[in-house]
Each structure stands twice: as structure tokens, then as C-alpha cells.
Length: 156
Image 1 (tube, helix red, strand yellow):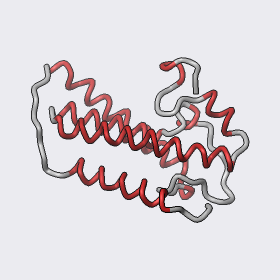
Image 2 (spheres, rainbow, N blue to C red; image 1 turned 60 degrees about the vertical axis):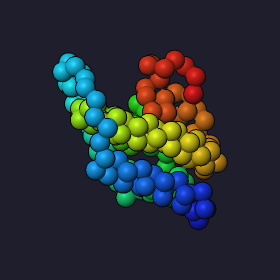
Image 3 (cartoon, helix red, strand yellow; image 1 turned 90 degrees about the vertical axis):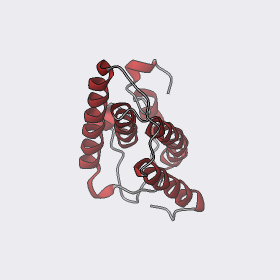
């Protein structure tokens, strides 16, 4: 991995700050119909499956920084063959699902901020990946960023 820059540290610090804010005991309650609670639970379960499957696939190659480690290969199979950033997708799905399930606007707001952060962090990460892996551009064309391509058309 090339030496992390200030932006790398800033993005990681912001990410963990948002995780902390998500866990902060603040609540902005609202009411939802009971029929929304089971899809919220499903989102949490799918999010955890994506997250842990991706972590299992990456193993010790994981880094919080948006730069690839040296002597690594591009993983484009398994959950990474479904979405390019399954860890971010899993976190987003779990956070939104939990916010819906707990009927908490605060958690939904922080989930939205996480999504925005992950969008910008992944854009930066992908610029680094294209420099490191020549095949990354083709991977971007085939696989969706946070959601499978089949759900969002054919644009990268």
C-alpha cells in the first residue's frame, strides 16, 4: 500500500466519527406501520451477510484506507462480483434497517450521511484502484458500486 495521505486519514476518521454518532444515545422517534418492520429486519440481515462475507473474502488484505495494499490482487468474485463495495453496502443496509426497525429518524439521518461519505470515499478509492489495477475499469463496467447492476441499469 502506498503511504496514506491526509485525505485517507480524514475519510477514515470521518467514517469512524459517523459510526460513533450512530451509536450515540440520541433518538428522534417516529411511527411506522408494522408491515415495514420485517423488511427492516431483512435489510439488517442482508447487510450483515454482505459485510461478513466480504470480510471473509478479503481476510488480512483489508485496510481502512482507500488504497490497495502492495502485492495484492483484485478480488472480483464472490460478493465482490455482485457489488464493488460490499462492506459499504452491508453497513448501509444494516444502518438503514436498524433505523427503520427502531423507528429512529436520527439513525436514518446518520445512515444517509454514511451513504454520502461512502459514495465519496469509494469514488476516491476507485481512482486509486484504477491506477493500481489496469483491469479495474472493466470491473467497474460489469459490477455496480453499492447495488447490483441489474437493479440500476448499465452505467458504471
